Amino acid sequence: MEHRIETLQEKKIVGKRIVTTFANNKTVEMWRSFMPRRKEIKNNIGSDLYSMQIYPPLFYQNFSPHTEFEKWATIEVTDFNTVPDGMESFILKGGLYAVFLYKGPASATAPFEYIFGTWIPNSKYVVDDRPHFEILGEKYKNESPDSEEEIWVPIRPI
Image 1: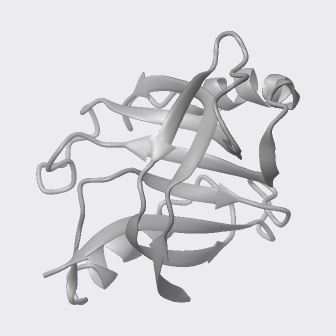
Image 2: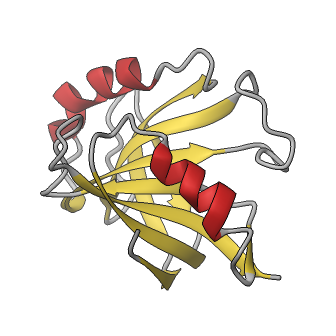
């Protein structure tokens, strides 16, 4: 899996969020409620969508599929002057990320198994306690085997 290390600059994002778990995943419902309304966000930057996760501290060290976390469906914006009703704003702080280019269906777990089970343990980095996200750009096609997305994992040197 191709990857690069990148320093993210702070971003302003707007969208919808839910609290979910891997065992009772409500991601599909959240995106279904966000997508028809995304055009209400008038001050967006580009068309890339951000699928963001905010995990509690030590989420992966003490992993349980029943641990709750925040899941967001968002788009980057210039400012927070016009946030549509029922949506929220968030400042995605900058920092160091490992970025993985993934090709395949969105529901596959293999890329995450590789990142957290192989790449991180064999790298000179550990997972940092900041939001994780995927950038769903022009080549994103959900469950298509031809779909492409970038997986951004917050890291810091060991």
